[in-house]
Structures are given as structure tokens and as C-alpha cells.
Length: 454
Image (cartoon, rainbow, N blue to C red; front, side):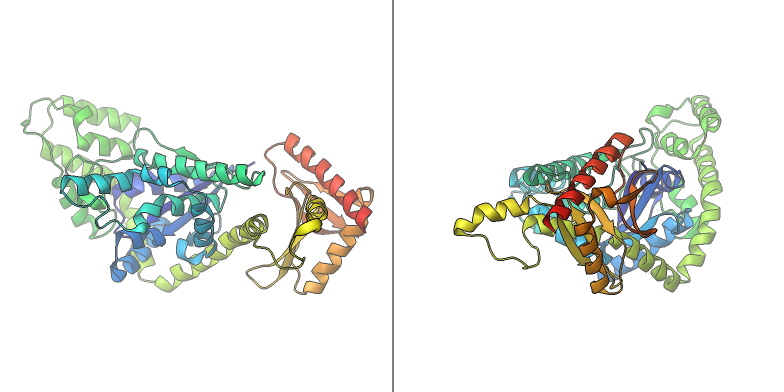
């Protein structure tokens, strides 16, 4: 089963080397692997928490989209979208908000840091702190859980948010007795997950210490590198590579042989100016070809918009049916049955334990349905139909089919169900052969139960 990897960048600034090394490059490289299903998104809802400058956010969305495409992202191979184009994300955020404990959110690093800053200034603990900042971890959890991401590339400062996403997903699963969400894991590149900035601290827009990736061209890149803070050791004096921001950044772009040579040059007393020039040349060798593609993309924003729209359609093909299933389990389903009360409760409980269909309308206007087992396990997803009556007719046939008459074709990770030689529905993908066989048994039981009720 492919590993689903999800990456996002908040759209509040111009992409810098830290974004590229810590998030963009490893995610793009991973997206080229045959065993990876990659999701990339512009986190523009998160941007609203950090900035109220509409022009800045609009510009940043364009720059970040162009950056990822210039860095080699293939939108035909991956799912590339804007967070704000997926209405299921804020809906899921609310579902998760309703089970998130205040104690957990009180411990979030960003909120605690804001409270500590207020305390140090003698202010009220929550002065200037918005509910958006407080709920940031829940929105991030929705970003991840909506697509059942297995791994999320993050810096070490974001590990807590992945743990919170796991906690929320696990709590939802436990409350509703079914594995609705995959529990994600943080993916960190040990050496370069956090890149130092001009002042030696973590490279961050918050510290105003970033080195731009493309903005300003080669001249601004060189000027920024020449401003990196170093110590006062003169040319000829040995430098300590392990405490040098220059070496850390160089190592993030160079191979083992180049890195070893640069380390030796520092130990041998190379001057800081010469070392900075070597760092600039090494980075420029990688960045120059991407910069050319970036500038062409920035000149054609309509093409980027079309790419993001296509990506949103792909993303919603996953998120829409998932949220439909969540609405069902939360009781937000269509009112097709009478409310349960009085002496009817026992009969209703028995009926709910039977296999059931859940119909929905796709984003493109076509009609589909899912078949769930008596325990709420998703067993089948139908093909799309232009006519809801055709979808209903297929449901009727499945109700009378029975397991013996079902034609199931095994696939690499799941199964397809055929009627009259035509594939009409498919199962979810399963992690291994054992899980697939267990699901096959469940499906046969469900089909026999439906036939018995018909």
C-alpha cells in the first residue's frame, strides 16, 4: 500500500531557503517515489491567523505555488491544492473541535508562548490572542486527517501538532467504534529539518532572518548570504564547522564529498568572506535552473490557477465522501427514517446494526453510494451515475444479489465488484492481504444479510 505524504506551507511570506530545504525539497523528492502518494497544499486558512494583510496573502499564495512547481512538483502525479478550495476542511475542523479537550489546546506551544509573552509584559494572559491561534492545532489536524495522511514532513517545532492530530483522530475513532482516520506520523530529516537564518536562529519569517529562495534574483541571494553572522576569527584561524551557520546551510545543499571539503576548508582557516562566496556558489548551482522556471510561472498566474483548480477536484474526490461518512456516524444524515423514541428504540437499534447504503452527490454532480457493514465498516463505493435512479437501481440489485452471485475481482490492494461483466463498485484499498481477506469476508456477510432482508 502506498504511503500518503502531506505537506503544506502557510501563505504569509516569500518562500525562503528554510522552506525549500525543510519542506519543499524532501516532499517533492518523495513524491517521485512509486510507493508514495503525495499531497501538497497552500495553507491559506492558516495564513489568516498570522496576517490580516490581504495583498500579502494573495501574493504569497502565487509565489508559493510557483515555487513548488518550479522545484519540480508534477501536478499530474500529485494532489496540489489550496486549503481554502476544500470546504470539507473547515467542516472537519468543527467536528474535531467538538471532541478536542481545552487542556490539550492549552498546552500547544504557540498558545503557551503567547501567554508567556503577555505574562512577561505584565499583560492579561490572553491579551491579543485570537481564537484562531488557539484553534490552530485543530485546523492542522483537519488538514491531515481529511486525507488520511500517513506521514507529514515537519520541523521539530511542529511535532507536537502531529501528536495532537493523532490524539484527535484516535479519540474520534474510539468514540465511534471504527477506524475512520489514519493516525499520522511526523517525518523529519535529521540534518536539515531546521535551517539557521542570517542571525544563527532558526530561519523564520517571524525573526526576519530569512534568505530568499527566488525573490530578488541572484544578486539578492548573494547579498543575503554575505550578511550571515559569523564570529571574529580572522583568515588563517581555524573555524568550528559544527557551530557555524554557513556549514549547516552548505551541508543542506552539498553531497558528502563537497561537505567534507568545506569542513576541511573551515578547519584550515578559510576566511569568512571566501567561505560565504563558496556557500553562495553552491546554492546558486541548484537554485538558478529553478529560478528560471519560477519567473516564467509568475508571469502566467492563470495557468497556476487552473492547476490548483484541478488539484482541488482531486482532493475533494477524497474529502467529500469521507465527510459524508462522518456526517452519517455523527447523526447528520438525511431524514429518511422516523426519530427513535419510546418502545421503538430496540427495533431501531437492531436496524442500525444491519448493513446500509449511504448515497451522496459528487462534486461533479454525479451520484454515488457507499455500502457499510453492520459495524460501520465501509465495504463498497459505487461507480458514478449521471442519473440518481440508475444509482438506486444498482442498490436494489445489490440488495437481492447475495454473496454467491457476487463476482469479485481481486486487485493489487482491493477488489472490484462486477455485474454482467461490468465493474460497478470497488472496495477501499487495504494495507495487506490479511486485511483484504477479512474485508472480503465482511462484504460477503453483508451481501447475504441484504439478500435476506430483500
